[in-house]
Length: 588
Image (tube, rainbow, N blue to C red):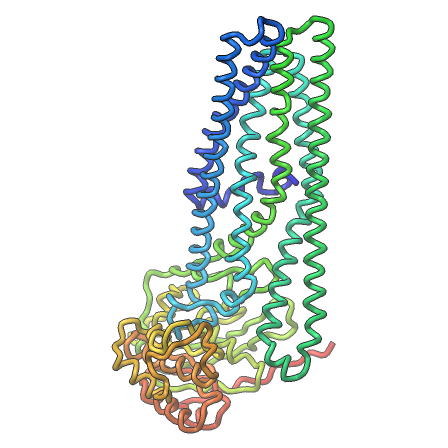
């Protein structure tokens, strides 16, 4: 495989632009490679000197002994430089991976669906992305595939840029004919690298995509294992996992076959090229037109002109998956601040591509503000019906508005629009402050916007830690008394604040997770400065007593509340009810 086949060139410019570690690494690599090139020439000259003096001279003389000591020092120097190059490469890989992981996490923490902090823009994480097996694979074993890129490919690439040039010049000075031969045949290695690379480039990327699909499928099966078990369908998934795994195996073996073939092709071309030089030297040595010293020097040095290029081709398959991973990473990092773009692995994150965070320095306060949706609709590519039909509604300050309608009519999508997770396909969201100033949500800083929202998603997120720690995500400075009051008003007096919470809330029931999320939202209103509450089915799965407590807490919050509701009692408490129509079903 070959770097020349890449549309971006052998070195990904995005890594160079965004990482100081890569820039420093390239500078150090060039210095080390230059020193190695000098030692390669010195080693060839010393070997030729020792052999020619030993056979043509008086045997092991003082000069030969000195040359042998110098040769040992040169070999030790090359080994030391190789070790230094390996150390520098490993450290650069660690620093780059750490930086990319931090940047991806920071990008995803900019606010997204599935937040673990109800309404907290700075602590929210996308359920569509962060819980996606694609991102788990990307940030875990995916980024680890950059190790071969730095440890094997880039060092050889730098050597390929310096060593052949120094070798060709040295050979040309010693023997112009051999220098011309090497200079003419070297491009053949590059040509074959390009030809092989065009064939193998897509295969390696397909192998990475196959691995991502396998992780997707396995994660989806695990997520739905309980449902599959209940309905007796779990055994049928074995075949599906086996088929996806077999596809991954075929892609892996195909990539390995092509990698071995590419190495064979490059070795063959390099061997023929060196043979041409060797035949020319042998004929001239026999005819007496060349000294043994010059012949040995050129013959020993000639393979080193091709070796770095062969190694680049041989190691490029080690780096190709790392480059495919880098594409996925930068697809997230190059999205506007606070949101991830479409994830290339085939699963869309659901983030809009527009409205960069920080588009407006003047951010309104939502206390006393009126929020209006004007003919807002949302459509996704590939769907024949909109996720949310054109809808208009007004959220009056201090009032509770209930959003009703059958499943699939777009209630949760409307909440996502208000949270800034989804950009409207048509229409707009208008904010009119208490002093009469009007703003468009598309022009606001989404981080500041979400800082004034308290959010309870349909599937509340929970972090490993304690109950109190999860409640405080909405207001980190809240006291223990505030936490206890929020839990009590959310109908969760039985949830002890210091109770341990396992990862993902595995040791909490669905009702306990929902009441914890409601308590988090209430605390955010009381101590976190939120002026608007957005709740998606906050009483689903709760007993009548807990439901009544939550309803009372929402009425007493005295902020603007939008609640997605199916239960009659929750709808009856609302000041305004907005029904959404059933989605249209298009029969083709």
